[in-house]
View 1 (cartoon, rainbow, N blue to C red):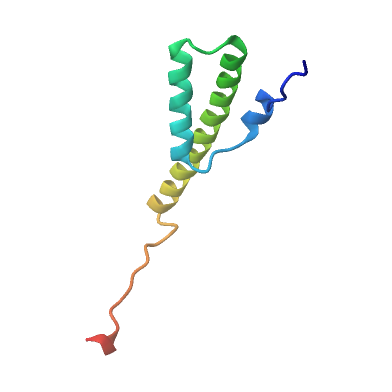
View 2 (tube, rainbow, N blue to C red; view 1 turned 90 degrees about the horizontal axis):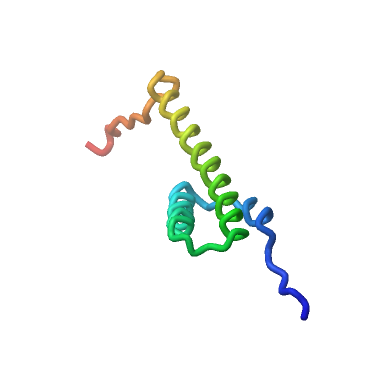
Length: 89
């Protein structure tokens, strides 16, 4: 009987989430599955690999946010100021 082809665990780890929030939700789900002890060895390894990808993704997102905050704190970007138009008064 031919084996059913499934996506390889390595290929599954390459797909990046749409957002930081979705990455964190997926990571939480993986942790719960792994902690439950219900995964087979191969599935556990794949979950671990996927978790490592998600952690790197989240770390990168946090690093970008920290850099943006530093830029704002250093005054390199000024907040948009809108002065009232005289004709509206």
